[in-house]
Image (cartoon, rainbow, N blue to C red; front, side, top):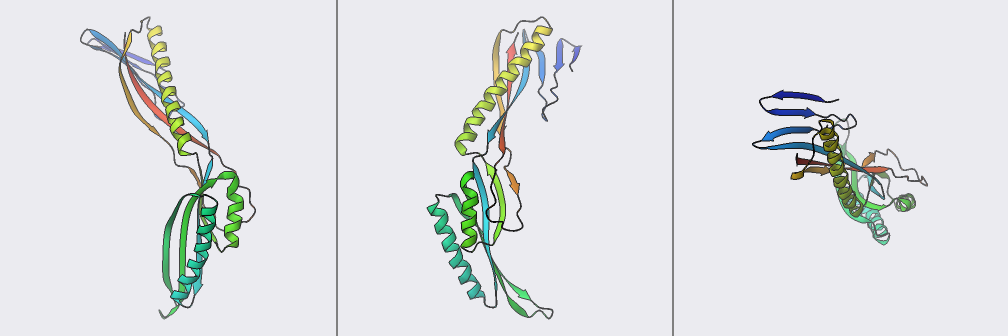
Length: 230
């Protein structure tokens, strides 16, 4: 797994861990009279999804543009009122559309209107709320994804950083023990970043009432580089 080379007073050690897409690297080099080992550690924490993020819409076809808009507005008023009663989070309008339907001779045959809103709810409540929204006139579910809460993601990020530091320390210990060297102190720390992958999304072509909603997991990743004098 490793490769050691010597040239002009420095030693390079490459450590590869196959389970990472970004490979941890340990690099030993001399800085004047100091010998420093650079180690990159990775940390991944898996979090259970707690919230469902849903985008629902109302689409209406009619002969008159004003009539289409009025009917959509009436349905959306009921939908938004219900979502507020259910304490839906991050309730946002995501689309407002109105466009004509043309015939073969480019004559206007009617109009299609579509408005969409996005919101978040605890996963156990989502199925029943979607059933209720369908009864109130929602006829589209455009997106369904599962996310952890913001507080859980922040806690997971801290845990991922801890895991990354521990991973870097473990790599350093392995490299230095193999070379029969003794670590002295950490002389540099760099947080290379942390990331939360996008939530899993599902495109739903039609509304299916009374369907149970089951969430998945979400992962948080962090990467840390340590410089250890030996």
